[in-house]
Image (cartoon, rainbow, N blue to C red):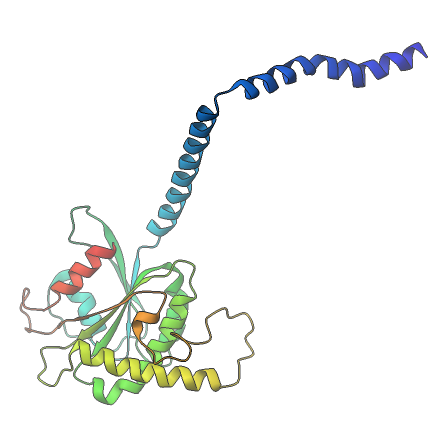
Length: 271
């Protein structure tokens, strides 16, 4: 019996007796603490947690340095890629694989991006987009402004898929539609290209939403672009789509003649 009493004292009463004074002291201190001081402490902790969370978001964002150059064949993606990197003109041909290089942006921070030129061939472009889209900080969709009138349906179909894929990413990339080949007399303006693309995308989303759903249940992409029941406009999208005009072939062999200054400024802004 004496042994059992000793065990009960050690396991229960002894432990409680050992820590109880400290618990009572802590309780009294909390009760006597100035409520204003407690509020300040809580506020400081909230700020610290916010800063930690913000730093984690920034570090994830900074790890995404890729800028994808996408578009149909012969839209001028590869020449834009070369012009941005070297400032020089170079004869190019349709590529069947990707090309990448580090690009130093023109800003005070000295940031760099990785430009990735993706193939524009119909049988390859979605495959390469799938491979690189998760690392994209930005997507530059290049349009041949001179051939746009006859290619508008193909441009809209590819753009539709690129937008759907971009909106499904955890970190939505910056998005630019570069209306290239503005040096050609028949080139359409960025404003006209935007308006016609909105009309084509509006038609596409109606037909796509009416079509039977695919068997791929793993897809989490939105069913359609824009607001249901309204004519499609780029301003309705969760990601900001910007337009600009440029020309990568403004002067054959002339280092400073290409009209890509607005594109360079945009890259500096998103870097």
